[in-house]
Image (cartoon, rainbow, N blue to C red; front, side, top):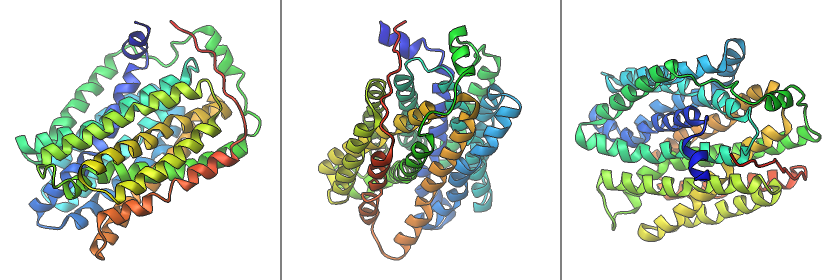
Length: 398
C-alpha cells in the first residue's frame, strides 16, 4: 500500500508523465527512420543525419529553457513543453520533403529540451525520499524509451511512418491542455521543506564533485544516446534467427528498455542509504563488461547481455541527479541541470553522425558497440575522484 501511494498518488505524477512523453517523442524517429528513408528513396545511413540537429537541440537548448523558467515560471515552461513537441511531431508526420522533416525533427528536439532542466529541478525541490523519487521518475522516462520502438512499430504497421508521428503528437497536445488546467504546483510543499530550501548552500567539495559529474555525464550521455537510438535497428540486424518482423523486434527492444529501466529504482533506493562511489564503480565496470559482450553475440545471447548492459546504463541516471542535488542549492540547481543536460544530450546526439560515417565507410553496427564499451571508463574515473560523502536523507513513510 505504501509503495502504491508513492508511485500512483504522488504529486510527482505530472512530472513523471512529462518525462515519459519527452523520451517517447524523441525516439519515434529512431524506429521510423528506416521506413521514412524508403519513402524518400535514400539510405538509412543518410536519413539519420536529418535527426542530428534535433538531438543536439535536445541538450543545447536546455540552458535557454532554464533561463526562461527562472524568468517566468517553471510551471509555464512545463506546460509549453507538451504543446510544442505535439505540434512539431504532427508537422513531422505531415512532411512532404526531407527539408521539412529535418526542420520538424529539430523543433521536436527544441521543445523536448524544456523538460529536463525544468522538470527535474521541480522534482528536486522536495528532498524527501529524493533518490527513490529520482529513480521512479527515471523509470517513467525510460518507459517512454521502451514504448517508443514498440508503439512506433505498431503504428507503422497499422498505417505508415507518418501515422507514427501524428498520433503521439495529438496525445502530447491533449496532455498539454490537461496540464494547463491542472492544479499542479511545485510550491505545494511543507513549510519545513521551504525553510530548508531558503538556507541551502554549496556543499564542501562541490567543485570536485561537479568535475566528477562532468565525466559521468559525458559517458552516460554518449552511452545512453547510442543504445536507445541503435538497439531497435541493431535487433533487426542481429536477431535474424528470432525474428525479422519490424513490430516484433520493436517489442523486444521495448522489453529490454522496460525491464532494464527498473534498475533506476534500485540504484535510487540504494543511494538514499549509501555513498555514491561504490555504486558508481560497480555500474561503470558492469557497463564495460556487458556492452562489449553485446558486440560479440547475436540472437538469444545478445538479448541476455543487452538487458544487463541497459540495466547498468539506466541505473546510473538517478545517481548523477542526486549528486547535483546534494552539492548544489535549489537557487542554482536549474542552471547546473541545464548545463548537465546540455553536455549529456549533445554528446548523445553525436552517435548519429558517427554511425553514419562508420556505416558508409564499411563498418558494421557491432563495431559501434565495441567503441561504446570503452566509454564507461569515464564513469569509473568520475567515481574515483568523487569526494567521499555519505548521503543519508531522512526517509519518511507517508
